[in-house]
Structures are given as C-alpha cells and as structure tokens.
Amino acid sequence: MQRILSTQLPAQVGETVRIAGWVHRRRLLKSVAFLIVRDAAGLSQVVVTDPAVRAALEKLTEETVVEVTATVVANPTAPAGVELTDPTVRPLGPAAVPPPFDLYRPTLTATLPTQLDHAPTALRHPTRSAALRISAAAVAGFRATLDARDFVEVHTPKVVGSSTESGANVFALDWFGRPAYLAQSPQFYKQLMVGVFERVYEVGPVFRAEPHDTVRHLAQYTSLDVELGFVADHRDVMAVLRATLAGMLAGVADRAGAAVATLGVGLPEVPAEIPAVHFTEALRIAGAPADEPDLAPAHERALGEWARAEHGSDFLFVTGYPMAKRPFYTHPDPRRPAYSNGFDLLFRGMELVTGGQRLHRYDDYLAALAARGEPVEPYAGYVDAFRHGMPPHGGFAIGLERFVARLAGAANVREVTAFPRDLHRLTP
Image (cartoon, rainbow, N blue to C red; front, side, top):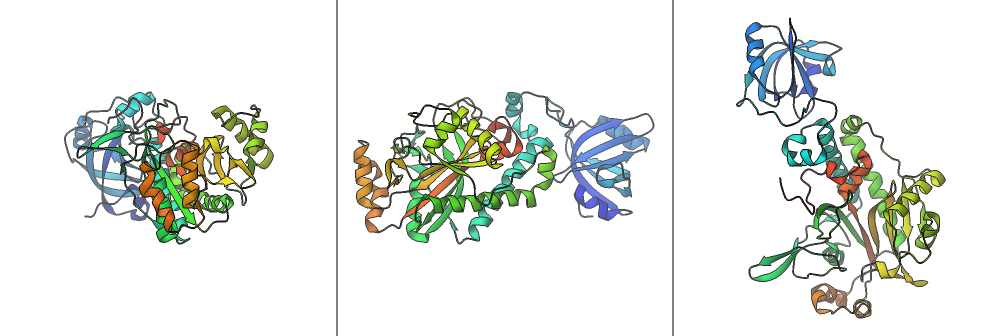
C-alpha cells in the first residue's frame, strides 16, 4: 500500500490508507487515546480505542518515527476534517529521545540560542519550517521572474584569489599552499558574465568576516544577485528589481500560502512604481545631519515609517549615495559626481538590497582605483575584461535571510536561517 500525506486524506474517506511521520503528540484519555502524526505536509489525527494499540502507544515518545495503517473517517473537528480509526501503529525506529522543548506547542518557548543549538529538531516546529518554506518559494519566484526575462543563471567561484573587495573583511584559507579567500560576493564575476549573456543571475552563499554581532548580520548568508547589460542608468536596474520583488512575492503566495498562514503574516504589495528619494533628501526626512555619509539603522526605520505614511508603501528606494561610501566600480552621477548612480532598497525600514550602475570603461576603472589609492594588480583578471568591450550595465543583490525575516516579522535573521553562521556559531 503506497504511503500518502496528511493533505491527501480528505480524498480517501472510507478507504484504508498508510501514513508515516513523527509522533507529534499523544493525548491519553480515559476511554480513548489520540495520536497526532506529523509529516511534511501537516498533521493527521489517529483515534486509538484498542487496548493493545493503546498500550503500545503509551510506550512511544514524541518525535518517534511511526507508520500507521488505518481507515479514513470524516470528522469536521479533526485536522483537515478527517481522522484515522482502527489503526495499526508500527514504529520505524527506536523510541526517540524527546528534544529539550515541546514541538507540539503553538510556539517554541525555548530561547533562540537553545533553538539554534538544537536546530535539527527545532526546525521541525511548524513556525520554523514555515519560514524555510517561504524562503524556498521566494527563490523559486526570483528564478521564474528572471528566466521569463531572458536572464541566464550562472554559478561563480566561492574561493577567490583576491583578498579585497571594497575593503570588506574576508575569510582566508590555504589553497594548495597559496593564499585564497571565501568570496564576499559574486560581483566581479556576474559583471564579467554580462559580457557573455547580457543578463545573468545567481543564487548562492557569500561570506563576510565583518565583526557585526547584530540581529541583521550573518557571516554567511544567501545572496540573490542580478546583473544586466545595455542599461541607460541605475533606473533601468531599479525597474528590474521592482519586477523581481513582485515575482518573489507572487511565488511565496503561490507556493507557500499555508506557511504564510501558519505565521499569521500578510504579504506586502509592491507598488507599480516604488517611491524613491535622493540620499540628501533621505537625510532630511530621517532628521540626520546633512553631512552624514551613510544611513544608520535608526535612519532606515524613520524612512520606512515615512514611506508607509506618505506613500502607503513598505518599500522605498534611496538613490544617489555618496561615492565615498560606494565600491570603486560604482558609476558616479554625471550631473553630481560626488554622488553615485547607486541605490539601496529599504523594506519595512531595513536595507534589503544594494545596487546601481557600474563603470564599464577600462580607463574609468584605472582612474577609480588610482583615486582610492588601490593597486590594479589584485583586480587584474577582472579589470582586464573591460579592455575588450563591455556594455553599460548594472545590477543588485538581495539578502535572502533579511527578506524572509521582514516578511515573517522575525526580530532576528537567525530565526529564519536553518543553520546560521556568525561570530559565535559554527555548529551545528
């Protein structure tokens, strides 16, 4: 008899079926016992009245893996409106050692460090697994949107020979006796691939050895990178980003609606045109000094509140960041060279995306590196490609964990990351 999932039971009323999963909870009442079995799709309720089956059930523990063969009966009060009766229950392994928290409760009461220490079991809780389902659906929507616009998915190296990209700290390693580093970004490679396919994207890990111990930073996170050629300026990139975000949210609604419902959150609408303010105006709105070189988290929160109040939008573009705070490959604003053709996208008051137009002329790269006192040699393999003809181009990168955390209303990106890596955590 083929195993079926809990969501398939309503179509099997009156039939004998076989399910399998984990013992989610046992309720041992005087005259009847209930076994709740959890599988990848949800919960099934098994009614036990036979004394021998009940005696066996009493010896099981929560999280033991079992197989149940039983008859499907309609019951409007049971999960999905059906329950299983006259069961045969067979353990598929030894009795499980219960985890240090109750997975059957609506919320996990353990502290976040405890959950992360026991991630393989904590992730079984519906609220934790729901966030990961949303993450998977968002990535599927990201890919589908870009595939439909003739982008090509690429896969770039995660071990690189240069220790510097925009001054970010790096993780060093030994590469057969030579120094190497974990890639901080696919930035250089995705630009080079514009010279091959014109439009590319990548979904992959990036590594930042920056000493940030905050609720929004990880040392390894998943970056959704996009780069496209033949742009007029950064506004063409912003238009693609807007469409990509809409596609990601559509993917979440289509593929992870049940997970969204489990978390009790609403999906935001992406405006047909996301409101945008120049960096100088953003400082004024946030009440920051006019000579502030960057936006602090408090400024981002203030801008998020302003966007919601003034435009009814959860999203806000901040354009024209100072060139001094942007990487050397960023294209300056031709009208105001001290400012860039770059942008950040804020989502509910937090930076989610950084992007912009890039330099595309070889001589401009030499000048940009010289202006910052950086040698060309570490970037030679990257910069040399621009001698052979590159179109005006630009792109962006979305931090997946931040996106899901803002969607899920999580206070900490670690709540939506399966096995986070940060300053203090290298296991499990």
